[in-house]
Length: 206
Ligand SMILES: Cc1cc2nc3c(=O)[nH]c(=O)nc-3n(C[C@H](O)[C@H](O)[C@H](O)COP(=O)(O)O)c2cc1C
Image (cartoon, rainbow, N blue to C red):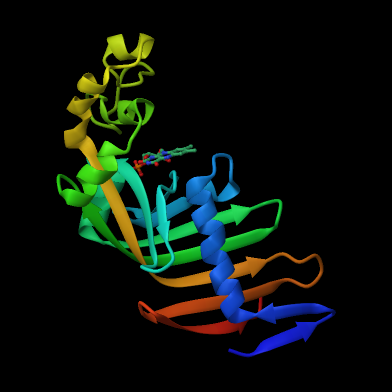
């Protein structure tokens, strides 16, 4: 892949693609990293649905991005119907946006979901203890949690009740797009993954 020099800055598509994954991986590892809470979007019954999630794992080699969710949630049912999914990251300090898209695999009660569940904290597990299910309409503003868990954290044993609701969504990324708001001269590039190890890359007009 060719590199170019403009106004004293060196542009290298392969290095930018690598840097995108480094940024995303850091987002999955560092609290308060701008890339820790991306937006994921998919097709719903009445249009596109978007929501913020916590990026749980990113793998540059496998080109995968993961988040956890309640398998009673709207997005889970939508992704069961149509597994195409997009991710949106923005770092306001570096003024870098990354968009990525691919195919979602839904894991529930399998080896990967069990491994992910075993690494979750009690605080995180609380998210899967709501009764009734997420998105159920209620007369008053409620957390959905059993009252006892509103006052005090459940024990590790009590959190096991949430396990049946826990879902892991792994996206196999097919394309990624980088946009840098570089003052007056923005830059943009797209990467399309052909196979696991190879990709095509192009500059785009921002
Ligand atoms: C900072 C932040 C992080 C969130 N992380 C998650 C998450 O990791 N998984 C999840 O299912 N919902 C998460 N949510 C809630 C979703 O944005 C959304 O409101 C909820 O999952 C219901 O979405 P749905 O009805 O489209 O399924 C998060 C919300 C915020 C504001």
